[in-house]
Length: 184
Image (cartoon, rainbow, N blue to C red; front, top):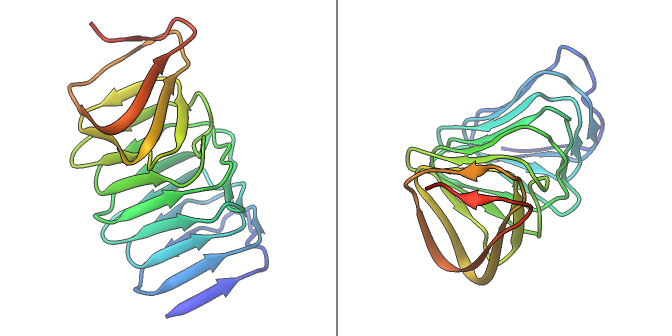
């Protein structure tokens, strides 16, 4: 099944759940304030999510975001918890934690996660720079940070220690700025 919503989902109490195989596309400026969940199939984001407090993938569901797609809720979070690969390619401005607990979260543009946000990898999750640059505040790396394409760059911008016993793989540059430092 493939569906597309070019209009707006704007009800304050609304939620969005992608739970079947196929692809659903959200292309409008969506302001609903409930959660966004993807448990099967693909949610293609070519518009804006500006009210949802959380975007979560689980099961076999994935999110693919075009360069025009934006998750912009100030305190919003993104959790990659599915077995698949989700891709963030827009200029996202959500202000909460990005968690990768299963599958792969891949960026498809420089700073696809708001610069300075915290990032956590755990379980079987992999964060893939995919050859792009990303500035984060704090990294709690329990599994793997990689760059599946050459020239990836990870910059730490917060004056706090990052932690975890996870691995760094692939070809990437790692930079510590503004007093940021690795855990000791």
